[in-house]
Length: 267
Image (cartoon, rainbow, N blue to C red; front, side, top):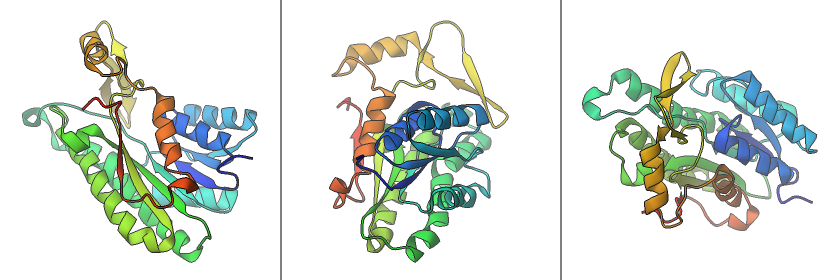
């Protein structure tokens, strides 16, 4: 018996990194999971890994910023598994520079993926949640960042979006309490993913929606994290997923509108 038996979850950005680990964890505890990624291959790979382990999963491939995505995401859960109990808004990336060099395109792209997309997904879920009350608590976990709590130089777009996620979270906790929905956020610190791994020589880029986005950090920054962090290391995607999982449990039914800093006490 899993702690999430019978529950249905949607996890955006779950083909890779933290989102993948969240999906694997929720599925291992009995949840049926809708996997999302920009690209079909990583989404289908995550689905296959869940099914191979005895779980249930389907994919919903596409960009969370597409106008029709939110409804499609929610409908995939309802049509495939007959419900919707857990929403994890995780998808995102960074596109950094200082404010005087930041373009409107950079600003809009990051606000769209980190703030508008979760807003649209929650808006799309509301009619179903209202029309289908439960005797248990549904769960929403929005992924924020310590950059949204404390700010971070070179990330005015990302920090602003992640601060907005906190406002979204606190407001939705008040709006959806009457539906027995807990809405919380996790604010991650330095978690080791493809976006934050050390790049020894030169720059590494990935293509996201037709844009070349620089990923990774310098070896100097990676070494500084190990040298200055109280735990002497960055967090792992599995540890990040564990924090999200905790907020999906019925044991946290009276926890709502909160922001859990998952940063190993680095600040």
